[in-house]
Length: 490
Image (cartoon, rainbow, N blue to C red; front, side, top):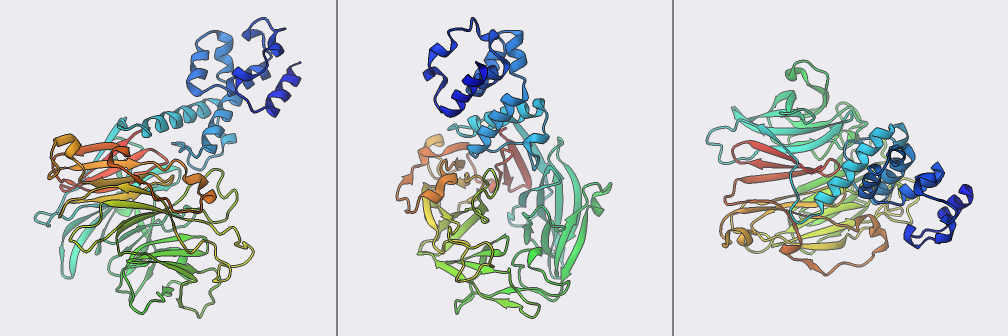
């Protein structure tokens, strides 16, 4: 009887309330059900209902603690493309039933909080950097990073003058302790910092000081001064580094990505995905292939490019995290959050969320080329977000791994009844980014300022920068005085 019911449930994807009641007529009470059927019923419940059922009796309490129930619920959240804090790169099969329950409840609570109009901060961490006096309001630079199953944040702050420019203090902070602990520290001669998103690379970041250095981090170092170590260097390069260690061929060689345009434009963002490099310039998106480069080839040109209609003022780029990873495509969807410039001294009051879709016709057996493009060469506008900024006001934005846009703007009249002062920290979640492959048309709708979630607001312009760790439900906000505030929402 139990096996027949289980088979029927697997074949009929219907809510429990709609399932034929006559199947259960011969069963006296819920606690008399076979264990496999009870598991199946619990898997049909929502997470709050499972926790409520746990409180009814000892039998339901034991069933609610089973591995089958929580692995099914956690898998369901993962299929909905919801972030799972503290999972890192562990498989579900390696987790205990208690760990599965903890992660499931953590992920569910994060999304419930994240999606509200005013998300509630669960915990706040403070990092206080010492700014250089009279540095002209130069803010700290910081980026989240993940290595070795932990979460860290890299910070870069001006420390003092040097014969040629300024000296900067580069630090890596452990966010799993309170207050955050500095585990690595080094002085560098440039404020250009690029974080390596590849977890299997020795180099965690690249800095210019003045040569280009690829740095690794010793997370077990007893002294922070020895926490950073040099993986390799590129000598005699005076320009800002384009990106990171995957492009390095030998210790002293490098590859130059050359624009096909007559006038070389400044580089805004660069991202590496497998054998492809995506470069965002002031008005151009370029796709390069680095998968089939011989030892004598030092200069390569794009295999595809897209010219935007307007000049870019600022941009953030992030690959779309999906579960399971690379289910259909070798290359993930790429999210781009763009604020265009204008003919006036301030940018436009809109943020455009573009997506760069994988090419379904890409042949993974061959290297990317102009005849075998891994991506469509035309980004699609997925949504447009209202985000007003005032003249000379500070603004910034960041894009999460699941498509959440976080931004600092000047929409404050709803809070202070005037629009000439203050800042707003807002966010917008793209609920359908994971299914973007099915959408081939640009969106023309504009989200109003009231559609955005508000993470905070203040009556002055002290906020300078924002970063997001969407997998862990964290947002970092930088202040003029060198303070970095990490807000946790999980």
